[in-house]
Length: 388
Image (cartoon, rainbow, N blue to C red; front, top):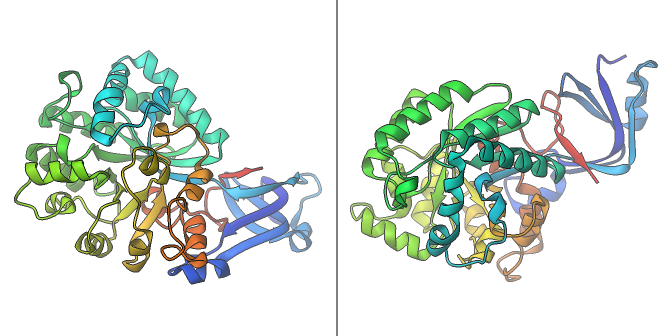
């Protein structure tokens, strides 16, 4: 007999190991037409073929029969803004105009704790109902937005990493703070929520244009104080944004150099978008173990550009799919991987590279973002999974 609480029978699919090149992906794919998953206190004990696993069943416990379902590990969303829930599908202008016209007015509402709680509950419910069991989330600069989201995720024992947005310039007065205020509020939130249940905290400067040197210095201090937190921000999403960064930080040759100067790159750092990176920036991401969140839906919707997936593979940079979903019209994270193939030429994405995108997205880049919970069913991992 096996010591377990729950056993689930069904068809299972996962990526059983890391593929370092696109050609290795197919060999790592695993499909069990009739399998048995054993769980104990929310963690996986084993995934076995039915013929092998049946012998370990306890006669009084039995199993949950889901043979009419295909069971997958829960999806990992590496970049999403929960405050933008109510503006989902807002007319797609270019990035900087879109922020001013839609995003900032909507985010101002999260100063109201009751409103934040209402949206947080809806947001988490929608993620789970669409198979996303782990997410790396931007809140607003209001501590109430973080409190609401973490409270709901804790109630459901969801794996969620999030943080208060930090910004102290080039935003409306109602969304502006000082570097000192941002530091103190973020520090208090880390102490209250980081590593509580299955939660983690991500230090979250919005992006370089809304950060003074003093704010990024505060972020650097927080990283030194709390080295097991994550860091998330935006990088090279839009060419106007990149030109703006060059004007604001002329002493740095490249956009990524701004973050790297303040020691914000690293194995727990996730940079959203990364569309217009040059080879030196790709190499820096590789050398520091940083990850990129590829957001194909958002990139297409706002006309920001096409992500250089072959360059990501070539430089062996960790990459995960981010829905950034509130710029589109759905909450189906799996669809974002498929949309990542749109607009690419056959030469850019061979069949092997297409398989690489569709199989790699939940775990390769998401590994640092999700605290080591990968898109597979290994023994000892939390058993978050979905079915259809």
